[in-house]
Length: 573
Image (cartoon, one colour):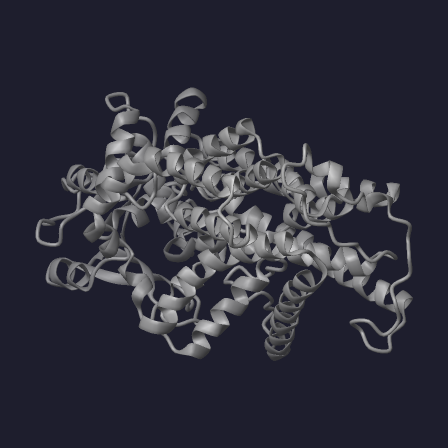
């Protein structure tokens, strides 16, 4: 077992390394630009009004809108969220504001905060698994699996609240189980204290709280107990503290609907199932920057992709079945409610009304965590010589959970019975099979993280995916000017990649009259059709195509974008 612990420590070190390596390499995409607007205390409306003045802006001037502003404070950060982005509660943004105010706003520093927060996933996940299974090996195997999960590593490097959400989900879940076990006032007070932190991290945390309520009430049977009362008091406290932000959300529902309307686009069921399969696979293996899981320019890649996605789906389904069969109700019910409430809240509207809410992987963090706990438990149970005995039900009022739990670590190794879940395969062969599966999953995660760490773009960067290629072209020139009438966050995403000698000019379509002097080369960045035709072809300039992107996400509808020209160049006739 000592060798196994050394291996797990090595995997943890790799997981930590991948979270901090090349923090400033990937494109700073639109959603991260939005975060920086909030940190600066600006709404998008305010920034747009100030930027669209027709004057070329230096990169330094644009950064005034992307870092703590000298004339704006943390209250402006909260106000900007309340006005335009109330689906994102302010806790992470307040933390990010002070982080950048104290340490600076370099890209690596911006991303180091979520990366640092993501490290707290490890102890919280360990404590949660120990509480569920009373097994140190199972806890360590789960932590190792999450440490090199490409999904968790990817979002640990994004300037958004998703790594903090993972931590608060695990922390509140662990403390809930502790409170249910200890049944002391102090344990319930500590659990209650984490709920405002959970709720003010992400709006979907309300679903986590609902799931925890279902778990408590379903696990307690039909009689009303003090445990139910304690949970209602604790959850009531959490909801009362969150009430001010709920009022903000209620007053801005129309804004939330407009900013998330693109997730309501209808897709065919096969496309939706394909997105689900890819999202599921990314928890373990993610080798392609456009999200195809595997891709190497060969038709056989499609076959491998299908086999891999189907195999991983079967593994997940079997793991959920296994944990329901082999663990007591208090364990499998917790995992099902952790995954099920959030998952169903995203899936059912898509199936009934249409949409792609359930395809947005960052919404499904609780599902990923539950799936990985179930898979880790199954793999450890079947690759070891011992059948993990179920934890017995806890006695009401027991002084400490560990008084009642079976010490899985000390169970005498017993061969698994032949024939069990794998038919005629002997226990030794089955053990080797599941060790091989564990090796594939861990190796796949490590390789995926290694490939992703060297990439400038990844599938999660959506509308900013080809900005590195565009910036590389612009940066080749002496004094370039990029003109755009487009979406401000998308343009500011490009600005992070440009050299200081470059400038950007935001123009309204009707206001541009002539090209400013003093620039060696002038480009149009993703202009509208009106901007391309009305003001240049009728004047003394000709417009030339400079960079046309390959199709983006061409395998997914409606996320897919056909090939489009991202960069044009203006030249005198």
